[in-house]
Image 1 (spheres, rainbow, N blue to C red):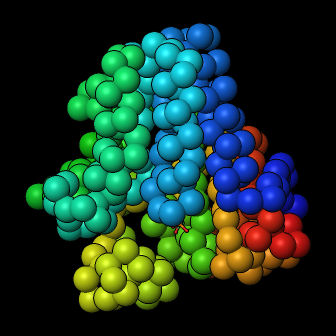
Image 2 (cartoon, helix red, strand yellow):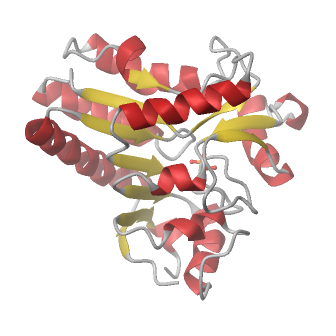
Length: 256
Ligand code: PGA
């Protein structure tokens, strides 16, 4: 598949600088034009540096953030919001609290949402989450990482293109990859997650896929070599989105 719009940076740091600038420009533009902006956030190692720089830029420029909302791709299930490994805590530490601390009108309780890993009824939680995204008017810009197995969010290989937010089982490959956050102990990694579906992600007005490091080169090579989208590589379903860009560092880009 032709990887439509892709930008390659020499290092992870320069990649993060470029992505943060790109996101910030979009947020500013959206807020100026319509008064609101919905940023779809991703967790994982790749976006960490992006959030750090985004907060730095915002702290210098001091825009009014009362019209900004964020939603997240996914959350482990079950997990408590107080668990340091929860994506709720990841977002609180890296983006929501730092933004709230700037006193620019961003109130996490009101403006930031993420699936509840502690929901007593996960099916109802998935429906609530879809409704919330709709009520916000949809996602303006969705950030995404890509798993070494081609997953996006926690849409593992085989995920239907029209899938919506739902409870899913994680694959062995993902559990292994994420055990690095659990001192390498696979048994500690939650086995399920609530994730936006591929269909939910495709509804966003713009998609931005980030990848860094040599371990992502094989899946990006595979994606580029595919004749068409296949459920075995969930990211391939996104390539036909009318407004998708790949932001890569040199190590990940390889032959893209
Ligand atoms: P990573 O995760 O940024 O930690 O590599 C990406 C993903 O698995 O979606």
